[in-house]
Amino acid sequence: MKNITVIGAGTMGNGIAHVFAQNGFAVSLCDVSKEFLDKALSTISKNLDRQVSKGAITADVKESTLKNISLHTALSDAVKNTELVIEAATENIKLKKEIFIELDLLAPASAILATNTSSISITSIAAQTKRRDKVIGMHFFNPVPVMKLVEIIRGFSTSDEVTKTVMSLSQKLGKTPVEVNDYPGFVSNRVLMPMINEAIRTLHEGVAGVEEIDTVMKLGLAHPMGPLQLADFIGLDVCLNIMNVLQEGFGNPQYAPCPLLSNMVMAGNLGVKTGKGFYQYTAGSKDLVVAEYFRK
Image 1 (cartoon, rainbow, N blue to C red):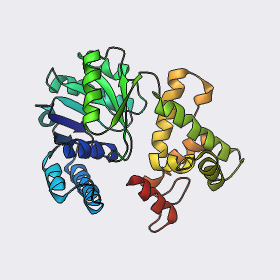
Image 2 (cartoon, helix red, strand yellow; image 1 turned 135 degrees about the vertical axis):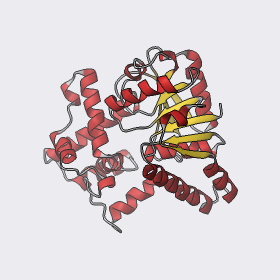
Image 3 (cartoon, rainbow, N blue to C red; image 1 turned 120 degrees about the vertical axis):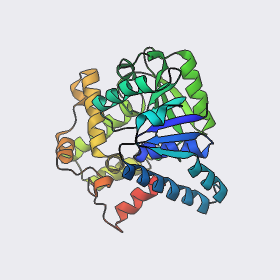
Image 4 (cartoon, rainbow, N blue to C red; image 1 turned 90 degrees about the vertical axis):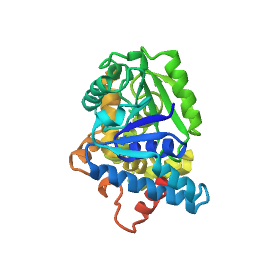
């Protein structure tokens, strides 16, 4: 397998493209506009520069990595010769289903179709295609070039052969793949998001302030980042979407998003990406410095 397509040039998409290209794969990166694609390529170049400055790679590796990436705004061009597609679009089930309907029509019949979803049912996405055995989840973690884990999620119909192929491929990227089954939130977000939601509820009920809650979790439980700052880093809109998936999937009130989370998303306070969440992220602020550190 040499030809990979990544759908979506945002934070996760450009990170996935970076990792595959650095490991010698020909990557077709696809998004709806050239502006998004150019921004993604610039981000990849800057991240490669950081690796060069740290001595992790050579300048020649940076150059070859960038040469391995081609940019596309037409999905048909991006997937015409692909062996594996990784969809990394917004965490929206309607959008993902629409993309997979198109992918099933346009990608070669032999191609594996993967989604980078962090919570949405692989089985429901696969149901939009005529190749349900070839649909699988590849949940990378941010920042993709740094984080070792890939959560490999088997849909109800995903074949053993496809699972084995994707597990092996992840190892070739220097990642540690972990196979899990298709239930809401999988493992990572089924455990993480209720914790974040409960931290927000603790704040909402006035038990303690933002920094106090995060300090307790960092110093008391050895978390590298407190849950409220982590929520800012993930994006409060993403956290809300995942909580909604968990609540719908399990039908249990314990997964109901905290009203404070819902209100902050409606107000546009989404965390690092908007400059304001539970913390302020203005130029030079300590919170922005911490957030940027965890991006590296």
